[in-house]
Structure formats: structure tokens, C-alpha cells
Length: 174
Image (tube, rainbow, N blue to C red; front, side, top):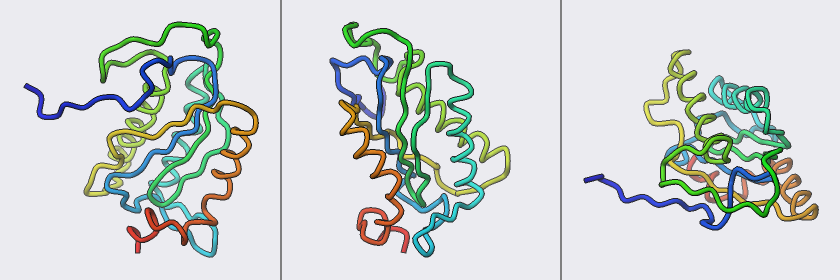
């Protein structure tokens, strides 16, 4: 019998391998500041933060169906807009799979591979965090239109300027 009875937080009626834009947020384990700091309104990444940045950039090179938009590596979380291309129209039936089962080219599989790549490369490079790097899941938002896209691009681009106002993140790191 499994210890945890986890369920997906994704929309059941949506195919996350469909063409479209997605905003994602991935937090570090227990929101610990593992990737660097915000200093004088600038993000200063450490070695692990740069590893996250480079692994994300590799995602587009490794997958034909991915186009990366803006992203930001913050001290204890990561924001990105990712565009999935070329699977068809939005009229397909939802992807059906059991929870935890990989679906090729889906948003969850792409994010899972990215997180695993960062963790694997951190171990290979001897970067020790003494805790898991990532939280178990991630937040996503399906981008619905151009106005939604622009608002999210601005949020990601200017996120570091709000670091000191964000109680959820800032207080944990200080």
C-alpha cells in the first residue's frame, strides 16, 4: 500500500500536451533560498541558480515542441512561460493516464525532466544542498489570450523588483 495518496492538481479535462502557452512556477523544497539572492533589485544567482538557468535553456534545445518565453530564477522559486508547439488543435480529447505516469511531450513530463536534470547535474557537480532541491509539484496557468500572456510576461520580468514585498518568499530567506 502506498504511503501517500497523491492526486494531480492539473485540470482533468485538459490535454497538457496540446499546443499552447503555459505559465509555470516551481518552488524549492520548503521554499529554501537555494538559487542565490536579490541584491539591490538585481537577481544574483549562485552556482545552483546558474545550473537552473542553463538547464531551462537546454529544454528548448532538447525538445522540438518547446519554445521558451521569459523566465526568472528567483532565490527560492522559478517562473517561466513555455509554449508547446505542434501537437494539433485544442479539440483533442484530454490526455488520459494514471497519476504519475509520464505522457510524452506533456507539460508535466517536460517540467519533471527539467527538475530531474537540475538535481542530477547538481549531484554530479558536487553542489550540496542537504535537502531536496524541488518541491514535489508545480503551479501552472494555461495562457488564454494575448492580454493574459502580456500580463504574465510582465509579472515574470519584474518579479525580482517585488521580492522584498513578497512575504511568502522573502521572509523565509531572511
